[in-house]
Image (cartoon, rainbow over all chains, first blue to last red; front, side, top):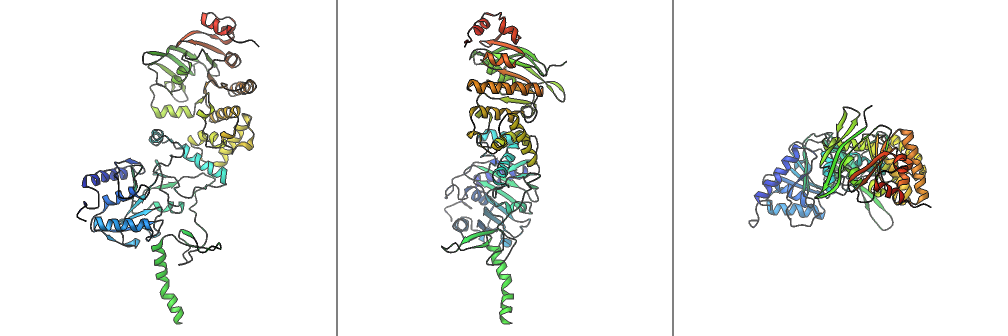
Length: 285
Length: 256
């Protein structure tokens, strides 16, 4: 612990990242370049999110880390342990108890509050990247609000698949201005982005930070005759029975058996806990 | 009558070398201007300066805007110029792959300009795309194919459809028939002539092919070493060339 500065990064770096975060909050959806540092993990494992989290943490914080909604996956466990060690920070798996939540590709099912920060790990911050490969050109397109191309992608989806087939990293427009990649969250989560918590996005390899202040207007792009739809797998969770959550498909045997379970493990555990007393009463009766 | 485009002494240097020097002309609505000359004579430089793709060193390009009348496009702000180039202007490149998105279907290519100016109704965009594909003689059932699957002539026609869908008033064409075989060239020229007449388009066509300007252009400008050496009505220039270089150019055409 004493071998590292608090929260791993040196104070100058944290200050630089905080400046980028403040600028991002001042211009919602705008990608702020920052001098991303090497972190003790490979690119693509959340280096951007980790740097943003490190710059936000102080010892009184309680950190929650999720990977695709789950608290117990390798990536989530590693990052949580990392901050326990270098930032001396309390950790939790309960969404409601956390002050900072670092997430990879999900928004928790529980509604977040004004005193929470949600940090996203972002692989590719530029929503126009696969449509226009030149960064010089995409930055100009953002500056001049030339966003016709984004709809070309949705047009192609409909013409090939009969519907908007983009299911994750679904492009959104922020306060009628910047088009933003919400990181690869399922489009089921898009409507949740208008939330009371602060949302910070960190892309380590691409060296970009962007942010959404609380209650920012977030509109998912669509066509008048093909409106946006927050889709999920049909059915309810096989464990807790919730039918309003985003579901993961789990293969259970080699014979094609499968089940759908909540991707948010904490929410699923809460639902099960809430059901337990009733089921015990049932057994008693 | 105000000209649609009023070009005043456009000059562009590449270091010490002349790109084009002191070129001035007017273009009136519905008129087609041809620019001919050998390669390296500055025709493409001139066209790029006019279309806002190159910044000229001096001179003015006044365009008759829908709002505000004649405005210098060289000094106007970049957002305005880019707005012009996807609404009132069109640019047909020599190589279709420069003007098309090769990874996007034909319908998406045609629809892009519509979506760029705010169309947000899939059905309407598609209807319009089909309409334009048919006008440039591409079968409607090819709408979801990528341009990669098209022949060179079809790609060029697709590029024309993509450019004309927003109803531009001025079309810049850089060697629109270059690299196509003669029978395809003839069909494309026929199509272009029809569209220009039918829509009342103004156009500036850069080419080294005198037959193309003979068919399409009302007026002709001959360039040599960055300078305009002769201008006039197309038939007049081609049938009775005055300047020595124009005489050479006209007499160099192979007779079959």
